[in-house]
Amino acid sequence: MIQASIRSSVVAGWLAALAVPSAAHAQTAPASTGAPAVTTPDAPGAPPATAEGDVPSVATLTFDAAVTRALDRNPSALQAAAEIRRSRALLEQVRSASLPTLVAAGIYTRLDSNRTAGGLVVEPESGINLSATLSVPLVNVRSWVQWQQADDRVGVARLNAADVRRVLAVTTARVYLGVITQKRLLDVAGIARDNARAHYEFTSAQRLGGIGNQLDEARAAQELTTEEVIRQNQRVALVRAREALGVLVAGDGAVDVTEWSFGAMPSLADALDDAEVLRADVRAREGAARAAERTVRQAYADYLPYLSFVASPFYQNPGVPTVPPTGWQAQLGLTLPIYDGGLRYGQEHERAAVADETHLDVEATLRQARSDVRAAFEEMRDADVALDQAHQSALFAAKVLRLANAAYRGGATTNLEVVDAERQARDAETQAAIAEDAAREARLDLLAAAGHFP
Image 1 (tube, rainbow, N blue to C red):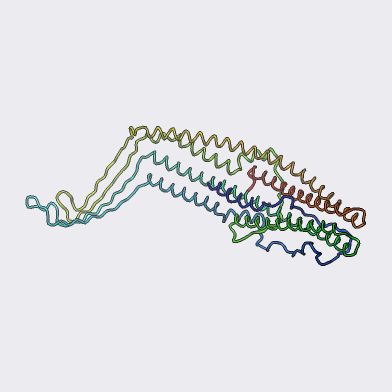
Image 2: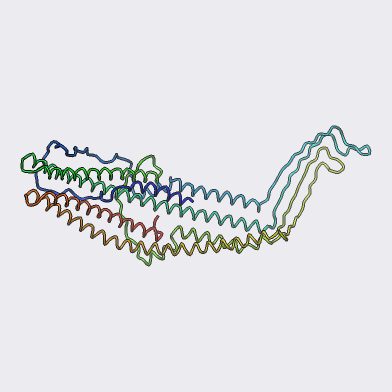
């Protein structure tokens, strides 16, 4: 339930943060055209000058600090810790059945008159009776077994809490990397907007100088407004991404990030071996299976007798012939459960079924863990190839843009080629940014699948 709440709350916020046009991504240095800067007033129908400025400044956390803070403050992690405390409290309750108990009682009695028999007072009109009862379970195997099983449940709660922390850490890491990518996409959109603005200002200056035309200016103005819309959408997406990270780390507002890259990755063989022993979800399922198997092995305790000792000292004032002023009594009680209508058999069958389910759960989790490792390893390898190609594509697109600008300024082509080159450069840088994010995500997936993160 805790893991489901993490996933549902984060996925909703994160999808909203990324709900922007995919074509709005890019990050490259503005192409140098070699032309002098031209400043002209806005022409009729041209887009107004856009105010500069990024999203408001917010608190910045490093990658490690963000993950640590999420594990320390996020309500899901705190709920998992509270579940451990609840399991310990249940252990204390179960343990009480195996420990001695001491109960004290006092009774004051008032009658309308003394009760007499043959001239003797057999019950005075008022009296005080004080007593204490000590109960000691001498031999109670069933209680001892339940005590041990409750201790197993505490261990399972700890393992489940570790699994919850794993899910939370991975989710926080993904959102953190997403903010890095979103910042890069906003930078790319800003550079694309600046390129479009430079082109618009050049066409506007040409028209005012009598050597341009309104078609080129209008076409450049349309491209500038489009790029500005894309930039604003990316700005909103960054705000949402930062807010989503702030929620995960239980902050008071949005949280910004710093650049982050992962170190050396494990080999496929090492990752497969480590996944079986390091992953928190695998350990949690194995712990639950061991606890369930123990309940099956210890079912014999339900059929054993149990022996208890009870001692009760008392004080009676005034004493009567049947009850002296002081005294005590002690009892040894042996109880043998013979027939309970089949309750114990039903419980035994239920425990066996639960144990089978937990073993199947372990098998499925291990299979999924190995699959995660293999998929992440392939994902990382392919993502690295795609990243290299995307960077090369971005370099070629930037070169094409420079050549198109030079050709247009030399009168060798129309600004259609410039606009087209601007869009291709923006899209190529978008793909490069997406490829960078995919490479980081692949490394996070591999570390998480192998149990190396967190």
